[in-house]
Length: 427
Image (cartoon, rainbow, N blue to C red; front, side, top):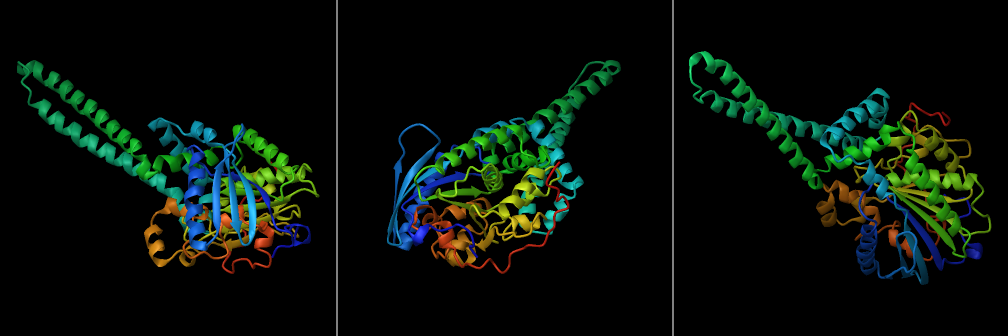
């Protein structure tokens, strides 16, 4: 239940809002999020019977757009920014096959040796399967490449063995050299060409992409890399500046890996006293979070401390939305509780379900059920049987996040048992 400063004085409605969206581990230009918002917002408006229009934003600054919603009897002007770290993502993605397989070994060892993998399985099997998928699929690719390379090399070596080479005394040594070279060169060329083909087709397989994603967190064993820490400081400065303006609500949306970045950014702001008590309402919406993939690692002291701190703060409202139908998220897992850092007086997050099997029609659900990556983005999309979760009402509607979910009970099937082995909040 909402018990903190989540409403405007006198129950007034929101007329202006700043939205800061923090994406997950995504190398693609942020314009994709504007187009997704435009397309899916138009669809949701038609389904739900409200009006939503987008406009370009002029001037320099971060990538974003303007949205005007005429929803629930109110008119809201929302300015939406994407807090970009796609350049950091691209720089972290190795372009070489050998380096990716080295990442595979290093990442698998980090999760297995630390025991994190086995504890994560006790929460949700879906995201763990998603984490194991790139490891298994990359190994299968290698096995296929080695097998095809072997048979191609063996076939060419057999042909080379029948090449006439003069006298019998000299032909044995020459034939040995020739067949060995034929096998070796063919094996290497064919195997490497097949691995390169798999890499070029990764837009269909997502094995390399996911490997880079999990390797990014595992490389520092749960600690934030220096480049990301610097970028998060910039994010905090932008949010702090918005909190000094006259808007009614500042809403932070963290999706996927962006959820735990948002946790740390907001914890830093509140600790530093940069959230004015008489400023806009501060709200945090985490979507499809994968917090345990990081907080369960040994060196994630900062993230665990930030989770504990934010969970008892009165300075904001924090709603966590996931869905069991999203196999890439730790659905209905309270990220604070399962990480083993729940403090006395814990308030947040309010864990609720987007309930894909109920908010999507049977026809729509059948069409999306096995599209795992698309479902991971469903929180940002239209529902043809919407419930109380509607991304576009939240970002462009007249109620604050706290008002919208006031009195809402948490999901009865949420998971709150502490599972994490590593609960330290300081190095």
